Each structure stands twice: as structure tokens, then as C-alpha cells.
Image 1 (cartoon, rainbow, N blue to C red):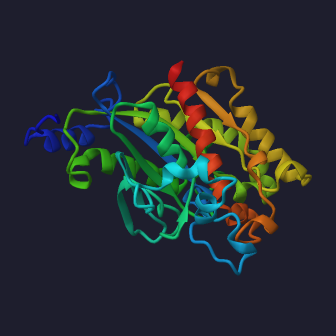
Image 2 (tube, helix red, strand yellow):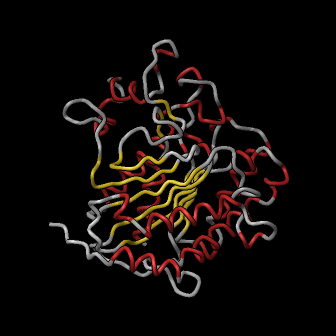
Length: 324
């Protein structure tokens, strides 16, 4: 049975946010079985999610779409949990998602398909949310903060890297604080028993991968990004998962692509990040255009299986960090 929320809870949380500059945020120190477990999913267009849901037989017989995955005998068993007893897309009430998309249109509710860059697409959030929902008895909340075409060197630039702070770094913090400052407004079933900022998932890199100067400073910028996010949200050693920008798969040979992926992997090997930052390889999830809905290589060829596998791997990596 859910607890009844005190009428003063929202006011108290909002007051705490006002005092954020001089005190740790209200969600920083809570732990135990009862709090809402909150995860931030951030990045650029591949965190937004470009995985095609609807099967179009005119495009490679629908291969690589989510509908194809749940119907194809070779994959139907693995993905059957995405359907309910009526064979409609299942909705998880124990996992909520909040996503103010690139057009500033708010989508929120129980986790299901349609929380990609468009309502006809998925991103890593779908599988990540399923892994977290299966892992916790607690209610889970995903706050998705992603925008297409954004670099870490400029758009997400963290304060510690010097220069102008990236406007989208600031937007991540603003949106997280906004949602946690008034959870009941967006999710009326929230019981008011508190929340814990439990982890951060990052899938980004294309705009730095195609710019040599941005590429050269990626490792430094990402390490600073992790430190600054933890400091600004008041959660020391916040578990942080980095998904590789592995478009092109195992056959990738472009020097900048290889350099950026090495930089992403290297961050998790920093001594200070061992045990609290994880790197997830994604190159094995690449699917060729012949088995996908499109030939947009920078968007993983719009392959829904790829996005699902990325989210699943990120979720499993997050579980390992949480166990430590």
C-alpha cells in the first residue's frame, strides 16, 4: 500500500532547490528500499533514439524494426516481454519515464515504446528501463535529456574544461532539478517517500568524432563532465555508464572514429573512476543496412535491435556498478 503524501512535500522540495547553491540536494543522501530510483539518460541523437518501430515490408522486408523482432521466430522469444497479453505494446507501471524531446514536447508515463526521437522510434531507454525495473523492487524513474547534433566539446561542455559552459550541460541540470522538484505533478502515483539519484547513462560522440579538435580533447572533457555532474547534482561517485560510439561495427577503420572510441574507453580506466564508471562496447550491436530500416550509418541504420541491445548492455553495466 502506498503512503499518502503530505501536502507540504512539494513546497519543501522546492525550497531545497532554492537553497541548492549552499546545501546538498534533497535526493543526494537517501538510500534503502523505499525511495524512487532515478536515472538520467543523456546524450545526442543516438540517446534520443532512432530505432524504427513499425514494420515496412518495402524496406528490407521490415528487418531491423521492433515489430519484426517480436514477430520473427528467430527473435520473438527474446522480445516477447515487450508485448502484453493482447499482443499490444506492454507498458511498465513500475518504471516511469520523463522526456522533454528536441521539439520541447513532453512525453511521460509508464515505460513503453515510442520514447525515441519520435513517437515511432525507440532508443536505449526501452531496454535500460526494463533492466532497472527487473532489478529493483523500488519504483524507477528515467529522466531523458538528449538532443540531436550536439558535441561534448561545445554544447555539453562542462565547467571544469574552461571556456563557455555548454548550454546543454546546463539544460541537463535544469531539467533534472525541475522534475525532482515536483515529481507529484508529473507522476501523481508518486507516494512522496523520497527519491535517490541512482545513476547516469551517456550515449554521445558523433559530433566530436567528426571534428579533429573536438576528438583530441574528448577524454579530458568527458572526465570533467562526470566530475562536474556529480558535483553539481551533489552525488559523490554517482554511477556513470558510457556507451561506445561504435557505429560501423568491428570493421571500422577511420582514425577519428577509433580515436574517439579509445577516449571513451580510457575514461573508465582513470583511477578515480574505477568501480563507479563503466564503459560499454557497442560495436558488436552494429547491423548492416541490408538488415536495417535505413542506411543512416550515424544513426545505427535506424535498427531497433541495435538500440535495444545498447540499452540492455548499459543497464547490465549499471547493475554491476550499483552492486559495488
